[in-house]
Image (tube, rainbow, N blue to C red; front, side, top):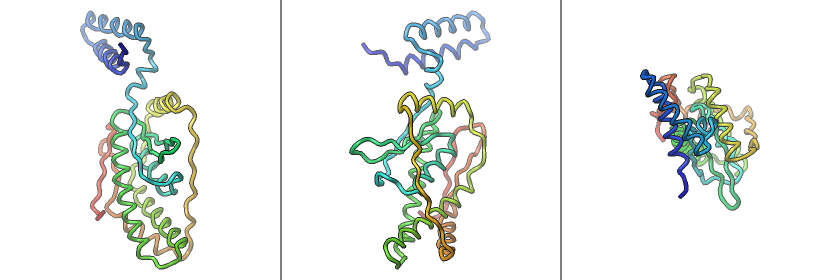
Length: 229
């Protein structure tokens, strides 16, 4: 019968928590039990450190090469939640954004990304529909609008230092499950002097959308939005 490694790791973690007991006999017994389980199932300290790293994914339905503003939004959300985001690609499938972080942070980051992307896509589509230029120029101006929207939202993100231990564990998780990953680059649209009003519209469209870190010691953030979707 195949052993469920996650359940074993959870049992070891419980023993290690009990090893902090004020009762010396209970603490010693729990520590011995943790060591026995680690030896029996060949669980290393590195396995225990990676046990709290979780993933959550979202398929945006976009093309194989997403535009700059989608990638920028994914990275903005990942940084706000002390996560890492990778673009997972499988042959014949659309790209999936995988948020990787400690505990529930990946799941919350994925949900936040989904909500913000929907709002940005809606705002960009409305702006695009009102333009009367050539198709290429309409797309360029709509991208400038989206970048301005992102700039406005990015200003609401609190600057904080991520936990280096979490970062190291996330990187180790990625190496273990994905190997070496390449940086996916996309160029932003160059804004022109005539785009000033488009930029202002993008900034205004993002009013009421913000990312907050309510309590510094917590790993969860709140998504607040009072503007119309």
